[in-house]
Length: 286
Ligand code: SF4
Image (cartoon, rainbow, N blue to C red; front, side, top):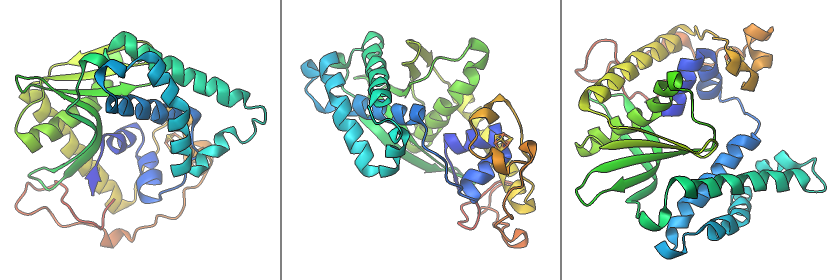
């Protein structure tokens, strides 16, 4: 009954993909690229445990094997990524790419001059409508003036300018949550693209956050309608190439599993005293 930026993006990309992930909870194969992103994020987070002067490129690179071991012990299924790699060549190349991403970060930011207020910060808030928003923010910096900067690391490449609004959706989502939690609009949103060496920034104003709030309510209305009717339309795009569920997707000749919810019983109550048509915090829904 809550929405995160990833699940909101899933629904916007393809309602059927949202259903497969959130309602059917179908397993997905681990991906080397996503796992590398998790590994790099862990290194960039842990590096700030060290004193400022010790946050160097060699130190960060030296942390990679240990963080990979840690990740493997918490998620043993990741070992299958390199199961057919007896000589360890693919693993070495994959770790080498993680090193390059970490090294590039030092050309974009200087961790010896940063003291994050928060790292990997879980945030959650409930809007007046009852819709809960949640997510994890990579880094929060707070200036002596009290101004807040929200930072997110991406291990991919920066999008072309015409697609930057999509990239900023996640950041404005977080800014809205922080605004609702703390009553302060973050001064700056910063996306750090390690794949291409770009930094994208945006300074939001209240109107931006109100706009994203309206968008999330509309999205949640659409999710609720799909939940009630069982009508989860596939929306094919070139991103289908990365979808784990093509074998079950009608667009590729597949048949989705039987819809798991009793449609008549899933309509959640309207949130207390809120506008008609908005979703509340009922645990029976998606
Ligand atoms: S293959 Fe494409 S259309 Fe089908 S569920 Fe996946 S993302 Fe949606």
